[in-house]
Image (cartoon, rainbow, N blue to C red; front, side, top):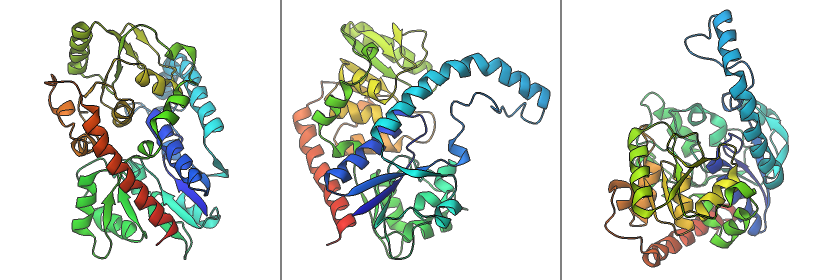
Length: 368
């Protein structure tokens, strides 16, 4: 079948890139012709801009906004190197439509043909962000008679704003098959939807075997192949508790601290690392500390010791639900776990969840 996926594939986020790749590859392995719709609305296009950066304090004052952009220019020029790494991954590993679209109206006016349209994973339904309010991520552009599916769509939060809920439910209810990444999100929708049922499935990265990810990790640049034992840290934000915990783990296990982001406590920082380097740094780590869903997911895939420090934003359900399903909640709730992870029991649970996720996708795409 001809399958088109729409997801956040080009937002310069390592996890977003890899989940898009995973769903594309799994569907191709099923024998389908697959493309990711190259959808890049303006609100997803602000990453790594050289100019026209806006600051809420200065955006209405031309002189101040110009001064702000000049001050940010050196940093912006450096960030272009990171952008090139992501663009290279996209060009080599993602099968995109020839045309780029910037709105649901454009998609509706010139819809890329397909038998099946899939709203893919990641936080496409998080209504705290604009993508969760964008009809394109609910496949509103798909023509009558086509099959419309969500696979592991993530709301990431425990709620939808009351004023957005009626339209949100109408959009979700128009889909033929509905699946979400978080169990709590599926339960939330099932309590609201009248004639459809949502199910929980795993993020697409779990659809591919570990060996596939190991092979991809080996294609990363040399800087990500670190020989000495290390703790890999992947933090969004600047949480003092994260630094304190990283230093405790480092001292306890005798590990160097390696970070992707600028850090005053890491032995090395690799800010230019792309999706492949992200994979390799987790695969090679002795311990992983993160506040990231996909760092958590790949820690499980690569059988790593890890801890998750919750984010300060209300987007922790995606991590807590995953860990609860694998009986690993202690890795998020206890900062000093009582024992090492028993991956033999984890993988029994994981294998069952993977099979259920694959069964959903197979039935949704092909039908009974």
